Length: 392
Ligand SMILES: Cc1cc2nc3c(=O)[nH]c(=O)nc-3n(C[C@H](O)[C@H](O)[C@H](O)COP(=O)(O)OP(=O)(O)OC[C@H]3O[C@@H](n4cnc5c(N)ncnc54)[C@H](O)[C@@H]3O)c2cc1C
Image (cartoon, rainbow, N blue to C red; front, side, top):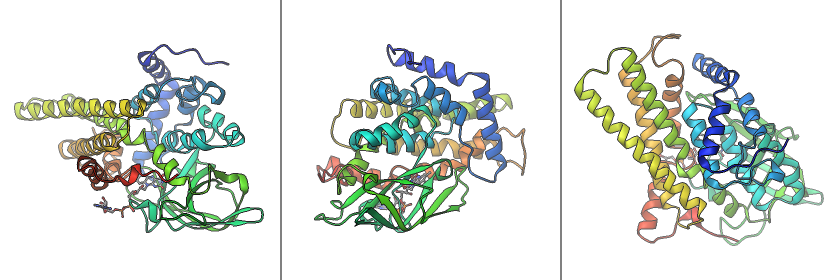
């Protein structure tokens, strides 16, 4: 069925809300929060929600219709991302699959790679993990050590990846590895489509307090065909930097800050604890900061949409939004918690409890706070920004 034409971003927002308000999808969210707050296992994937959005062309609305999108602009994609955060729908599978792997295939994949993977990604039936970080390499990703050697039949990959989220929900990963050639540490990074079922891929969980389990992946002589390479050898750095665009605008983080603050205020009100004038005043000031953070994130979206160069507006927005969302989560804990063990019925339960557990990772994922501030400083000083470096 062909998805309907969209008119503007208010139309996109209304459509997403209508879908997310379906009783079955509200139930799915409650089930996910309750299961995750109870602990144990990975955060369940919101599969029914993804499929419903996908069927309406709304999981990747900015993609061409031929691949399951609506041929909309990047504002539509940001609107969807914001609504998912505002509704508390786990969105890392979408970020990894659509914003990272999908954007990369759309930019540089062969017609065969696009035809094979993009429609399933946009429909919510195919999920990708992102294998960039390594046990010894995070912020300085250009120092990655995983190698891809050419063989007569294709490529052989060896190395290790770490802190990869949502790997348990994925069938494939977009994987960064070093290929022969290149003149500096960025010039020989290449990207590959890696089936997680390939012999030699060993995946183990790294449990933390984060509601999403992280994974460690060992790649032992993993054989890939020629056509697993995305783009040209050595194009990887440029492609992965571009794909971080929307994630770096902070829109998902700003959405979390808004949702969690509204939940905190509602919980305080319900408990008759919103009376103290001083506390009310502090919460009003926080409310204004959350609104300002949303506007900052939308300005960064505008820069992405209008292809303005310079990463500092996105870096500033992601930094501010993730720090603020983290602050709101921890304030909830301070004002409402801590809950006794297994306490359904406590005002933090279930989704604010998940917020508290998610909070530490917010200022690490998609660029740590310190590294983002370096980017802002480099831009102010007119210095070189490593995330903007063009290698090709
Ligand atoms: C929720 C979450 C999801 C993630 N999902 C994925 C995923 O799906 N796939 C994937 O590949 N990776 C993923 N990661 C990993 C993430 O990309 C890395 O954690 C991040 O790049 C930081 O790397 P690191 O953890 O090695 O820390 P490091 O880079 O070692 O940093 C450690 C500390 O040093 C500081 N620091 C580092 N460099 C500098 C500098 N130049 N100046 C000042 N301070 C500096 C950092 O700010 C930080 O405080 C995820 C992480 C989180 C938290």
